[in-house]
Amino acid sequence: MKEFIMNKILSYLPVAARILLGLAFFVFGLNGFLDFIPKPTNMAPGSMAFFMALVNTGYMLKLIAGTEVLVGALLLVNRFVPLALAFLAPLVVNIVFFHVFLDRAGMAPAAIVAILELYLAWSYRSAFLPMLKAKNKPAA
Image 1 (cartoon, helix red, strand yellow):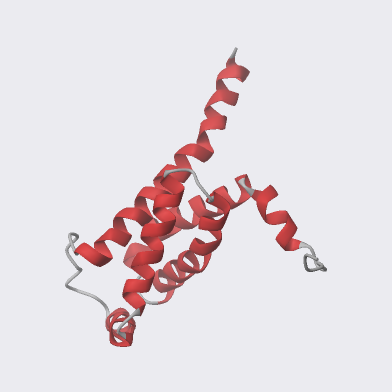
Image 2: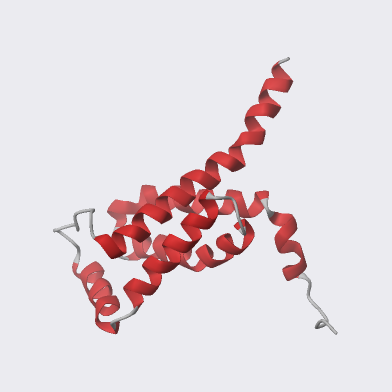
């Protein structure tokens, strides 16, 4: 009986991870457009320089926010999950590196996001295996 319960709980872990990651990116992506979460007031100089560089491009923050909304929605509705995870991977790497090198205060949430991304990538590994073949042929 205990084994059955544990297997049942474990079967819901990918669903919980997918929903948590989807909510995080959907909400923070929407914030990029609607600005409902207050911005930090005491950013380190390196963090501020990085943020201002993104602002000065004129497009990068909206591109990031749009990607976050799209992949967050895909994760929440359980559609194209491996594709959403592939789009999220560079964002998650950047989030982690930003907090490692520029703003250590946000390291815990960054680590949680990275762990969720890695866990889901592992859970959906069968979808990624064809991409990891050393030699592929194009479709005829």
